[in-house]
Every structure is written in structure tokens, then in C-alpha cells.
Amino acid sequence: MRIALLGGTGDIGEGLALRWAYDTDHEILIGSRDPEKARAKAEEYETELDSRGRERTVKGFDNEMAADRAGVVVLAVPAYHIGDVVESIADVVDEDTILVSPAVGMSRDDDGMHYNPPSIGSVTELVQRRAPDEVPVVGAFHNLAADRLANLDVEFDLDTLVVGDDGDARGLVADLGAEIEGLRVLDAGPAANAAEAESVTPLVINIAMNNDDMHDVGVRYL
Amino acid sequence: MRIALLGGTGDIGEGLALRWAYDTDHEILIGSRDPEKARAKAEEYETELDSRGRERTVKGFDNEMAADRAGVVVLAVPAYHIGDVVESIADVVDEDTILVSPAVGMSRDDDGMHYNPPSIGSVTELVQRRAPDEVPVVGAFHNLAADRLANLDVEFDLDTLVVGDDGDARGLVADLGAEIEGLRVLDAGPAANAAEAESVTPLVINIAMNNDDMHDVGVRYL
Image 1 (cartoon, each protein chain N blue to C red):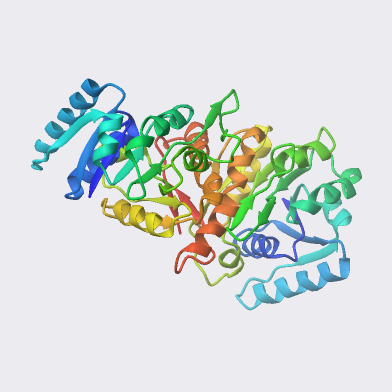
Image 2 (image 1 turned 60 degrees about the vertical axis):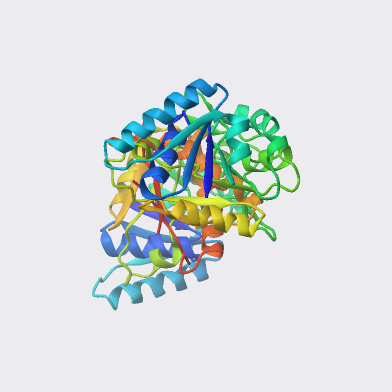
């Protein structure tokens, strides 16, 4: 499988790129608005993987070229920006491309972090609306502990959720997620359930802010 | 400490009553609109505890009398009903009474369970608005696995969150929670952060509905 990580130069994109490249044989493409930046990051990831005895090719492209080449496109970009990114790749995705939305709309004030979804109810549903009708959309990888995910020295042992209306696409993304060692993927149902999954992200940030030794906290459902 | 569980005949009230009575020496009062029902349940809990070698007195009252006698009042009643319950006890609570709100506004449709808070933003904030100004309000115990909590045969190993604007009250409720064996209490900050804590309840129900062997699922933040 070829997986494109748009925004693959950011923290969650970096973690998914490194883990998939390290734990699986899927081909990893890094996308960015700036293809130079994407190529530099891809090279950095290759060096990091190489230093751990894992010789992998990671390629960098602009977002559209990365999306064009991939079967699964992870939109690892900020929520306020994701609609534009979806439109920028609309011509190169079709019913055989799965769009994955890990973004969460949040706002911060003196009390802490708050879930602040787009008016349609969730970022996952926003992506669904902005994407061409035939393209399946899956919300996933919302509240991974980003620092731990991107640090291959750390043994991972957390859960993530998938939501989406296309059961096959949801299953495929769940399987891809589960190939990352220590990551368990749970199904949270249709896209209408995305808000509850997404809002765990501001919650874990509030937990990190209000408790000792909980920096970069993740979730296990048990 | 004397703890009143209004709605202590329901599942989350039952779990908290049994666990606190079993694990601590706090005095447990069961409240219900119907004092007969409260007394019957209190007796049932006593019998259950007695059968496990824990001789405890649990008393049942109508809600107002239970609240009047207690320093901590847990409003273990449905979200749509909680405002009325708060008003029914307004005359007997004061700045020395902590109100604890474990309720969550939810709606269900074909997709699953959805967070459906009151317009003020969360049930915790609703309780705060409806309670007399001087009474501290803490949101807590929202997404405990109710069946496991109420089953003393089960070793408990889950997290719960406290939210509220009064730091002392939040700390006291956190300490009370942590006296239940296997329950870890994390601080999620002021009442403005309650929505994110409450919305974990519909999420875990969706997870239970969409995955095998996840009935009565709880959460650990790690």
C-alpha cells in the first residue's frame, strides 16, 4: 500500500511516517505545500530509520503529487486548513483513494483547551463534505501521544479510534493502524460519531496541563 | 465524611455506594424521590456488603433529607432531570456542601450515541447555574464502567476525571474518588472543560457497540 502523509512534516505526520516505515513495508510519501520541505523531511526520516538499521525510501512531494500517487491519504494538517487541502487534491483522488482525517478543531483560553468543531459537527464530516462524493473518508489517529509516536525509542501502547461511513474504508484504515506496533485501533462507528472521538484531543491536553507527569498523554479503552 | 448519593438506586449510584462503603469508612446515604425505594436499596447494599464481611450501615432517605445530612452530594440522576433535583435540594445545601455531577446529556440515533449537552455547554455548568451561588460544584465519575463498578467481585483499574471552578472542592472530590480501590482520579481543570470530560461517556458507548468484547468499557489515560 502507498500511504501519503500530507502535512507529513508536522508532529503527528512525522510519527505516523516513522512508525509505518519502521514497522511495515508500506511505501511512505511525505506531502507538503512546499515540496522542498517535504523532500528535506523525507530525507531526515530516511536517515533516522537508517540509523536504526531500517533502510527505507521515503519520498517527498507537494501535496497534490503525493496524494495522486497514494491509495491512502492522511490529512495531517491543522483543522482550519484541512478544507483547503482537500480541495487542492480533489482532482487527483477518486473512489480508490481513502482520505484519513486526524485533525481536531480546538480553541484555547485561560481555562484550557476546548473542542471547537466546524459547524457541520466534526472535522471528519467537514472533510467528507469538501471531498468528491465518491471518495471514502475515515477519521482516525486523532489523539495519539505525538511525541511518543515520533520517538522510535519509546514502546507504544495506546489506542486510537476510527470513524467513518464507509465500513470497508474504516476497516482498511484500522488494519493499517494496527500494523504499527503497540497501537490498537477501535471502531467508533459512522462519521456521525466523529465529534466524540475528536474531542478526546482537547481533553487529554487538559489532563496533561492539570496533572503531574502526564505530558503527552494517550488513551486506552479497557 | 458523609456522602449522599441522590439517585443512589441507579447503576452509577449503586457502584459508588458499594465501593465507598466497602473501601472506606465514609457514611453513605442513599437518596431517591421515593424514600421507601431509597431505604429498600440501602438495605440491599447492607446485605451485599455484609455477605462480604463488611458490616456497614447504609441509610435511605428522600433526596432532600439525604442532601441535608451530607457534606458531599452526588447527583447520580439522569441529565434531563438534574436541574430539578438541584432545585429540590437548594434549601438544604450551602457553602459547606459540595455538589458532584456525574450526569451526561446524550441522545441516541441509528449511528450511535451522541453527546447532547444542555445549551450552557455541559451538565456540570448547568448544575452550577441552578445551584445556589455559594455551593461548590464538581463534575466527576462520568464514565466509569458502571457494571464493573457495582460488582465488588471485579478488580477495578480505571480513571475518572474531576472538573470544577473551586479547586479545593475539586481536590476533595478527587481524594474521595481515589479512596475507591483501583480508581485513579485525574484533574481536567475548571468547569469550562467539563464538556470534553462528559463527552467521553457517549464515546465509550459507541466503542462498546462497535467492537467485540468491549462491553462496559472504561478509560485509562497514560
